[in-house]
Length: 454
Image (cartoon, rainbow, N blue to C red; front, side):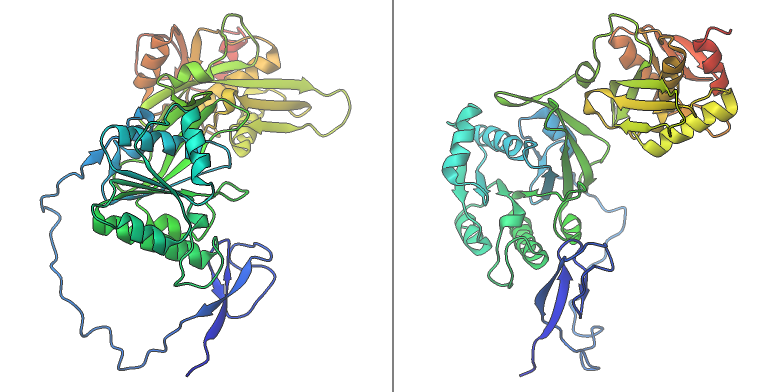
């Protein structure tokens, strides 16, 4: 019998090599290679894949396709991120930092589905069943008819939930604790995570069960385990937020049954996670008095506008020390670009000043329409002249100093008007809404407007 070949698999990215080395050549992680047995089959000419296969039918693009039925979780913000609810036979992977509230959210969703008549199985590989029961009682869900168990063997789990009618929802918390006796290796290794997830997903597809897998995240925020895990599932959700902040955001990274531009917003309370139907009220601070360096920006999260406050602080240095640039909630490279445009095109000097930029509430911005709001906050902080507190600002800034229109301008203005704002700093040619518009073709026009030059 041929001697089994050995290979070394990176536990961070899943790449394999025939020799051990201290650093993975693909992802750069140190001491992440672990030895695994390799079942490699040497193919010869008689293993011709062009013959002996099953012929299947090809369909055209114009074939009738029925939309998949949705199962509502009873949590509107959760359903929004999923694209309308859970799909039977789908696999969903949800990741987030430890203690962010993943288990709490899934326990609340499982309890609501069970109380609505759905058959739900919740398998915990990290906590004992009594610990989950205590959490359910704290959340006021102790009477929910959820079938609960603590197990880590995939074979035992499939044998249990496969008896009779399969559950409508199966929650696995977490996939890194699952173990398959078909594969050698400890739970959490690349081979175990891949094999365990593959068997659970196969069961979900065959029996029409909606499967939710909880995934750990690495120190850089990505879901731990092989990258192929995200390709195997239908939906990938990221549960974001800081443990020191009240809010949590559920964001879809991948969704085969819907879009990835919707978010669900929650607030952590004593009774669990509460839905936030008006996120703007959560991210806006008290606007009663005028403060230099503060601007309100109407961000777009899918079809939902969210108003957030951008705060800037500019401190002049007396010595020849190197000025510091600190950013929280926005791209530091984009801040450097806005500062360069303000210096080169508008004649403002930030080279001898420290600049601090913060998006209030711990919110993270990636919308390029925030350029004009950031520029307004920086100009206001530098000149110590407040931006009108009843105005919002949005627009994209080019390196030439041009202010360009952005998408969904009318929707942003309508949301601002709904919350009591009466003015807006916008690019020239923007859609006219219910607000009093101050339009700018260049960033220099915004500087003149805020400094009272014209």
